Amino acid sequence: MFGFFKKKQADTSDGQSESGKPLICALLLKEESFPTDTFLKQLAKTKISGKPVKNAECTENGIITFNVGDELVALALMPVPYPASDLEGPIATSNIWPAEPPISSLKKHKAHLLVTMMGGKSDPIRRRLALTAVTALAASQKGVMAVYWPDATHLVFPPVFIEMAESINTPDAPPLHLWVDLRAFQNDDGTTGLFTTGLAPLGHMEFEIPSIDMTPGDLREWLINIMYYVLEKGPVLKDGQTIGMTADHQVNIRHTKSRFGHPGKVIRLEP
Image (cartoon, rainbow, N blue to C red; front, side, top):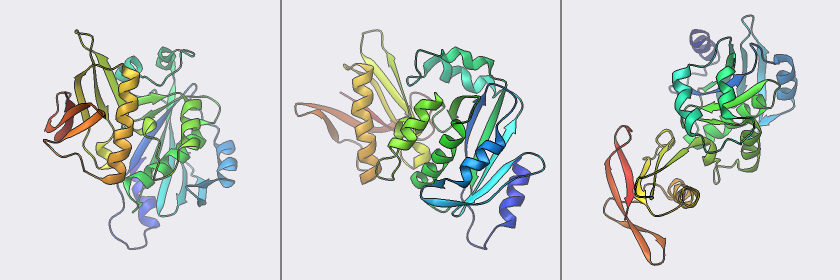
C-alpha cells in the first residue's frame, strides 16, 4: 500500500517543502469487506474540516483515495485481522467502551481498514481533526466493529467515536478523549495512578501521576482540563512549579524520565 501511496502523493506534488508524515488509524471489520460504493457516495456530499473532497476514486487494487486541501487520504482494506499483539492491551484496559457489545468480541474481527493521511502542512491538531472526520464517516459504515487510534493505543466503539467527532471538532476544543488514552490504575494502598499516551504526537510531553487520592473518573476529568490548558497555552508547566487541584491542594510538577516506557521526559504530577 505505501509504495502506491508514495507514488500517488508524488504525482500530485506541487513542488512545496517535504510533505507531512503519514497519520494512520484503523477500523476493525466484522467481515473481509467494506462498502466502498456507499462510502464514496456519502463522501461526495461531505466536507472534511470545512473543505471539499476532491479527486475521489477507487483504484484497480481497491484502495480509495482522495484529496482534502493539501492532504492525500487513502483507505485500504486489509483482509486479515489487525495484529493481535497491538490490540491485547487496549482490549484489556479501554475506559470508553460500553458494556455491550463486550469489547472481547473484537477478537473475532476478520479484517481491518487502514485510514492513512499524508502531505498536509497544517499543525498536528488540525491534521488530526481532518483524519478524525474521515474516520468517523468510515466508521459509520456497516460492519465496522471498532476504531483503533494508534497514537493513543486505544479502541473506541464506533457510535462513541462518531458522536465525539461531531460534538467536539474545532482546534480550540479537539476530541482529546479520542486522541489520548488516560490509562488509570489502582495502587495497593487504594490511591489512583494514571499515565497518558497520545500527547507526544501532538507536540507535548505525556503526563504521569504515580499516586493520588482521587477516583479514576475524577482524575481523568481533572487531567483532561489541564491537557486542554497546555494545548492552548503551550509548555507552561515548568519543572519545579506546582499546580492546584483545588484552592488548598497543590501538586508538584516534575520533568523526568517515564516510569511507563515513554521515550524522553514526561510531566510527572505528584503531591
